Length: 119
Length: 234
Figure 1 (cartoon, each protein chain N blue to C red):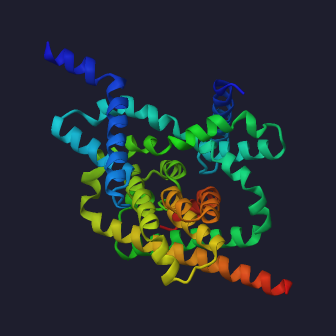
Figure 2 (cartoon, rainbow over the protein chains, first blue to last red; figure 1 turned 90 degrees about the vertical axis):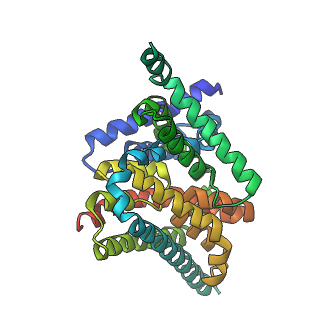
Figure 3 (cartoon, one colour; figure 1 turned 120 degrees about the vertical axis):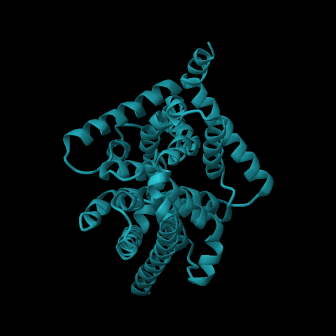
């Protein structure tokens, strides 16, 4: 299907997600509502994979560059966080390692239990 | 006359778009030449833009006129995550409980660690809010930070650094922590270190990569609901 129409579908769902964000009093970003709606549309086959995948794969492949302007925005908030920079890095590193460990271990334990149950 | 030239050229959206693309290309080239994970293209691009603005004295606001166009595309790009999630439906169905419970535990342990350390070290509110969503993919993380009123620059640093940790140490962690099951390893990478860690995982093994990209989306959605609850106690 025409790439522009694929974009149109994704933009339309994004717009609907933004609408849900403004009417539903939950701190859920419009983008996440949009993603949930898109997933449901695919599951109930209201939207077919071929109708969105070219535009979706393109958007995901160029996604990283979209973060450059936000990241550079640190220039405006650096003054506010300068005093806490080491603490910030400490929190980031420790929480990442703990979450990595817990997720994998829990997954292995559950899969072992399920395997044991079948044997 | 020169002030006219300045506002015409740099007050124009094209400048921000151009600088962003150049900075990112430089990041990709350096990353390819050095092959070092620490030289992440995004990290280099961000540093390049900051240094460039500081040296030339061009206002961030002027750069952001064009830069904001990239940020504008984040919402549709996040919506597009539904597509890889849908493609992996069969793996998802087969291991549903292991996937959902382990990612949930990963998200909870991450936010709780941030909460406890922030309390312990007296970290200010806006920085704490900026850190809370730091393990999920940036598009979702920024949305959460915005909803909470945190500093988005902190979120960016947190997300990028978490991702680089995952990409750099995935094999080391897998050995030390004895996470040898490929599905479990993929869940760990995606939940703790999102897309940057997963992009490295795909090079190691396809199943690890597939599980990683699935966890990015699920962990992102779970974190959206967990963060406001945990933050409300801060």
